[in-house]
Amino acid sequence: MDESTMNDRQLENRDQAQSPDEVWLNDMFHAYRDACPDPEPSVNFMPAMWAKIEAREESSTIFSRVAKGLVTAALGASVLMGLLSASSSQPVATSEGSYIQALAADHASTLEPLQVERISELEQ
Amino acid sequence: MLVEFELLQQAQRGDASAFNQVVTAYRRRILGTISRLIGRPEDVEDVAQEVFLRLYFSLDQLRTPEVFEPWLYRLTVNASYDYLRKSKRRPESRMSDLSEQQVMMADAAAGSRAQTEESERHRVRDTVQSLLASVSEEDRILLTLKEVEGLSLRELENIYHVNENSLKVRLFRARQRVLKNVKGVTKRRDNSASSGDRL
Image: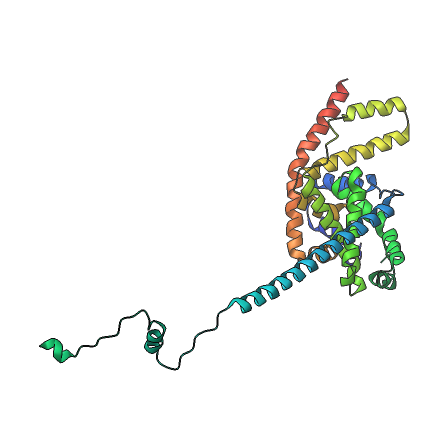
């Protein structure tokens, strides 16, 4: 037999000096193919297959609907929270002067008049 | 290829009739391959339906006709592998149920050549399934595709997406693991035959 006409199995078999067990195993594999012919499909094969396909399609549709609903709900909730946070925030008091002046103005009624003693008076 | 690429394209566009024709063309071959891969006749149709279901939902990814059959084989292998892994069941060894001697006696009583052939096929199925059940699912599937289904190394390359040398190594190791169990099986057969001679 020409090498070009030999298939992979024949090439491998030729290349390997096979033990009796290996020869027996090859024969068993070949016989197994003949002993297990392709079975005939049952009459329910196609209907059962389409039922499975439809069930899978339905479950994926339900999943996508649930996912879309969740996305819409999350979007709505984020808009609502944004509006709530915008309405509840207080206007920030602005002042033209320094930080100390702003504090003094804010607490003018509660603080005693600031008394600044001269260093020279303390030294006396 | 058993179908024209145009038919596959029609199926890709959602034509149920075209998809039916594709399934009809390939189902016997796929059923046969699965039956030899999983060794469980009662579950073969379920696994085959899973293969075609996966095909249906991934058919839009097919671009070239030449990859269709390796791809279908890959889906078959994956579905069979998933089945074997999920069930964790091995094909039951039926050799213990009925010894060769009993089979031969039954054959002699029947005196029918057809029954003798059937008992021989039964013996072969049991022996090979016992041997394949003794190795991992990966080894079992690889050996079945190569040695029983008769796929070439090139076809296996397309299915497994590994190069030829890696495949040869994996095949060699898988065969070695099976060969380790051959002695046990042949010894059991020899014992059975010799006890039959004594009777």
